[in-house]
Image (tube, rainbow, N blue to C red; front, side, top):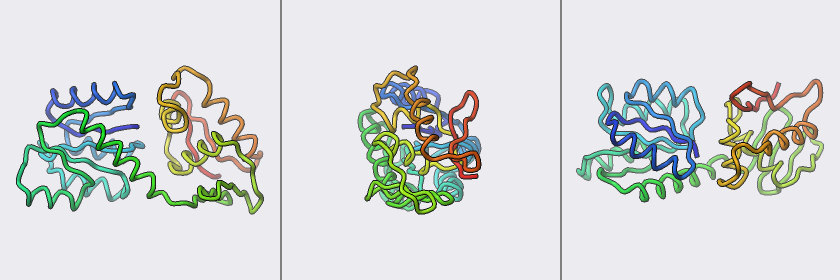
Length: 221
């Protein structure tokens, strides 16, 4: 799980970051709304932890700006506010709300619930050019021709297509397609990418693009 924390209190940011990284999450941080919006637009995050009160912007303003470009990304808001009316208003622009102080365990549970909910929103059928993936039928077609993929190859392709035109690191791919405890130094990702390329690509048809020192980007040419 890749998480963006938008929080201006260093102690709280450090507390959340350390806790999430102990759960094998990949974490990036921002201490202003402007910086958080920029990071959210430029990167692929699975969920955002957003403070309601920031020096430059309110949480609802930040959420609205992010959702213009990433309408389906789950956002959890943190705040000292206990007023029920404010909570109800915030739930109109975010997905969950947690009042400070909070336990790290509860935060992790809520974030994982939000990301699972987000996965459903991708839908059953994904398309990119003449490539079609149907998750219910576990089928893949290129120009109407069926392509036989093994389970991990299918999961890898599905993850790529869900994040089309976004750079995905090997660590992110390992966490979603393989077990969270998989050795991050393994060449499993590269091996399966090579196998997937052999089955999908030709000299004229490229889907998986290598981004040096960063990972892979999926996009039909």
